[in-house]
Amino acid sequence: QVELAESGGGLVQTGGSLRLSCAASGRTFSRYKMAWFRQAPGKEREFVAAISRYGSTTDYADSVKGRFTISRDNAKNTVYLQMNSLKPEDTAVYYCAADQDSGGIVAVSTTAYDYWGQGTQVTVSS
Image 1: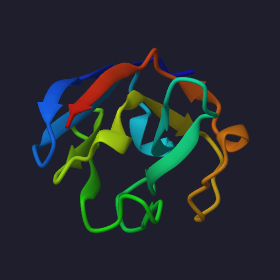
Image 2: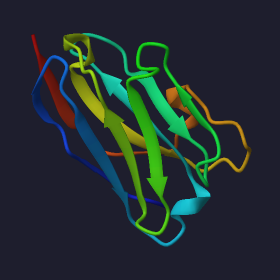
Image 3: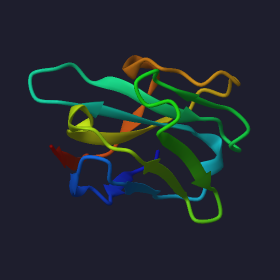
């Protein structure tokens, strides 16, 4: 089992940047594929980015490609989401999630992920 805690959210102007962090408990962080999702008010939770267990594979939603970068540091049990060129439509609660499946494919569906953090609010003002 793993516990996840996000940080780094806040209020930023359009065009600005934020870096989200997700710290994981336990000694087996590298066993998990990790992802970021987000949920805006009144909308379903949606996939943002995912990364394989050792970082060799990443995937992004089309809406964030070229602006967001997911990375991980297994020595620090942490996954990051660097968000640049932020837009008002990026406003949401951002969640990190862990997938304990041993396969190589990174999943984009919420149902594939076994553990979730509590979320961190990102607000982009216009």
